[in-house]
Length: 149
Image 1: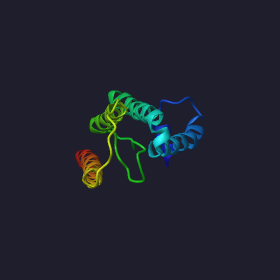
Image 2: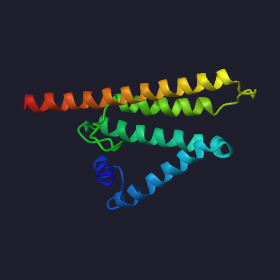
Image 3: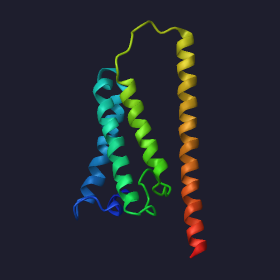
């Protein structure tokens, strides 16, 4: 499915989607693991931001071509391209770059840990809700176009 989504973007040279579809998830996993390990977190943020910006650019190019009826390749369910997805990836890249900046070190208190866990859960829930809203919006647009034709 991911290979078909990459192929649908029509940005890769002919016949390379199969290779990219196998290499890209490995790169994503390595970056994700790098973000989890404190020793590698600093250098992992930049590749994460780069991946998000590359995905946003690929989506934007297809939207500018008028090709919004293709799956973004973001997951198992069909998620049609939209400017909201481009914005989402841009915001994720910007957030990664912001947190990669300098920070003041201090001892973590128990209230800090509780606040951090609560904030992370709230941010994750907000991300999932936003993602589902985008998915449903894409489905509604598709159904409206189908009904109009």
